[in-house]
Length: 179
Image 1 (cartoon, one colour):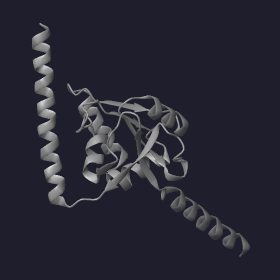
Image 2 (cartoon, rainbow, N blue to C red; image 1 turned 60 degrees about the vertical axis):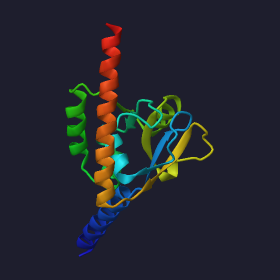
Image 3 (cartoon, rainbow, N blue to C red; image 1 turned 60 degrees about the horizontal axis):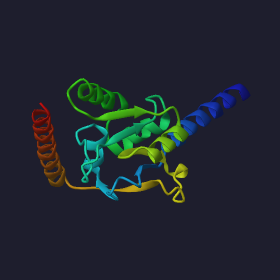
Image 4 (cartoon, one colour; image 1 turned 90 degrees about the vertical axis):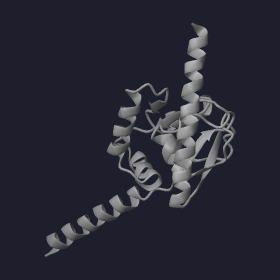
């Protein structure tokens, strides 16, 4: 009887540990010295991390920093913030990275590497566990996420598509002028 009770307690403990560890509070952070934006809509955050949005408003290229795919924080970020699974995000990156998109995704070794990389890389964006975010680190700032309606998501997508097309036209014009 005591063996059964012990097994039940172990199962409950493992289940609770898994539930607690997967429910992390994730914050989006960016390089404070080069990223002007302080807020992004939820659809803009998704566009940035899926490489659909490749430039900030100041025309600086966006550099996306993430943790390895097997990291619990990465899984939480994908599912809670982007509302997709990590393998779906990886497929999107693969599609964009093999196209002519100039976007960059850098996989950091760990949270400390991620934090340092965002602090020193112009245009960088990434995510942290809320407990790891420290307002005293002047090179990093928290990006507030606003949740928008489906109508706003469609407008954001159309707006970003137009910006991307304009950016591609400018790049092509610059290349022609160089020749």
